[in-house]
Length: 211
Ligand code: B12
Image (tube, rainbow, N blue to C red; front, side, top):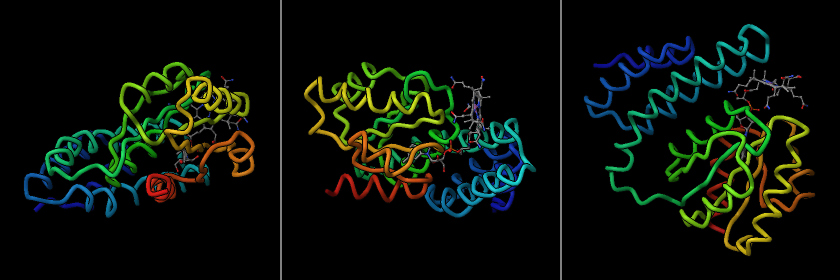
């Protein structure tokens, strides 16, 4: 039997090789992807966040843990699709133009995927035009915008304006997040929702597709 405590430790310690190996072993033995995500991977990333906040972890540790989480998620993706579970909805996610921060965005993407959404991740520094094209091509119902810099928060506004100009604003729900973003700012730019962290983002996305 796979020792799942090792999965938790591997993500906490940023060891992608071990996290992938334990994940592979557990999946071969029939473990459910969601059990691994919610039981071990997300708690490990939460701990990473706490260590970062109290300055025991720094950016390199954050990046390594994010990479370990990604390595495990990549093994689960085909399985989640194979299970034939109808996705709850399709989400286009990206960090807005001018902003290269993607750790939080990746976490939100992982959690949404684990929560049953089909996620199209456009990466970081994504222009409004690319968001518009992705919504059109992939027929997404939800768009998730991330920004970590006060100067790039305005790119959220221009992205929402681009949806309006393209005539697709009323076909989608836009959710926003990232450390400097607040509910007040979300309201100000006409977003449909805001959440402070990755797990609340899943609850929010569920609410938005149901609305
Ligand atoms: C890591 C980091 C970097 C890394 C980014 C690596 C990467 N691949 O992401 C590097 C070194 C590249 C970097 C560069 C810069 N950075 Co920097 N960086 C950070 C740092 C230390 C951590 C950010 C992080 O990853 N946090 C952890 C994640 C998990 O948290 P999070 O992103 O907030 O995401 C959570 C929530 O916000 C939410 N969320 C996030 N996105 C979304 C989206 C949706 C839809 C929803 C619902 C929720 C949601 O859920 C996430 C999970 O719970 C912060 C400081 C800080 N404490 O935030 C500075 C910080 C953001 N950086 C800062 C700055 C100034 C810069 C630079 C301009 C520095 C420079 N002079 O070059 C450049 C900018 C480059 C660019 N154009 O983007 C400033 C921003 C100040 C400001 N107010 O604008 C900060 C706050 C540091 C500081 N105190 O000065 N940075």
